[in-house]
Length: 398
Image 1 (cartoon, rainbow, N blue to C red):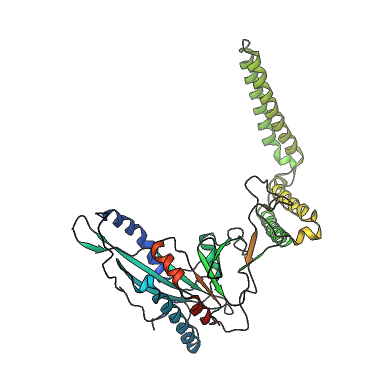
Image 2 (cartoon, rainbow, N blue to C red):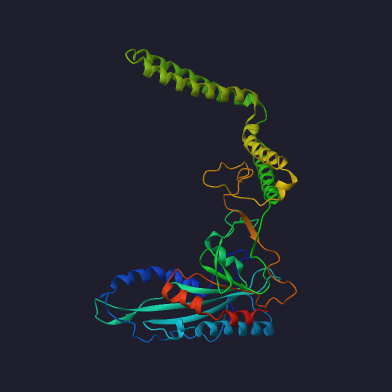
């Protein structure tokens, strides 16, 4: 057993493993190698690939589980990896070297299911035009199989609506493979319980969460500007400066317009625009006469809080229970950022289903298998994803 590394990411962090971090570092190197592919008609398919770095042991990248549970979990992971190795896409591979890896992690939450990622990486052969030799590339992107890790579906958009509240734009179910749902045309979700991975966030829940954040922001700004003056007379110097500036700008433009007698229509248009802007500036000056510096700093936060409170108060009980939506392309968002009332053409806001895992089962129970993206090397990875024996995988679920 490889020694554990005690650097577990937070429960909400994306999956990161020894192998996946290497992938990111090597992608650029792979791209520099690809231009060396010489004769496009060169047939490299007869080269029998080999396993470059056999991984017979599972790697631990987090706090170890109790020994007995750890061995049970690893046995399941190795069985899943054996199912991957049994696919014709990998078993009969030509023109590529390959490797698989398995990395276990545990979350900081001692009650959350243990999770892991299995990987399949290929190294294509190419004819190096500089040396005239057939060579194998550096490591490139892989295909991952995620165990008990539903956040893998979200990818880099992890909780992109509200990280703290665990709200995300809904990943779409775009089809199915062997009877299992496919999310975002990439991720095949295999489970026994039939529970949806994500559940909608109601408008009431979203708005209450938004209100709580705005109240915290208001409290913080009130503390930050606690010593700011509360007497409007503190604005006198600013008022005098702005008043003088408005007067000077008016006089300057009047002189310029007087010299433009030949273009009365142009003068009229410019004067109209100037008058509008001047009225706005004069209104700001009047506000300075009755509001203190502290009020001016705090007022925008109070206004945003009040607008969101009004938005919630305007909803009926039925509307409060409806799913919250992000605005569509042509929708004007509400103060909270939600789509207008009645609009459902935007993206629904969801969170992880709290009933996704059976809490009565041990942490090492395999309850969810996700076959990951095949956008890299689709000729190989897509085949492997399709050829994986789903009955075998289902049989490994607890």
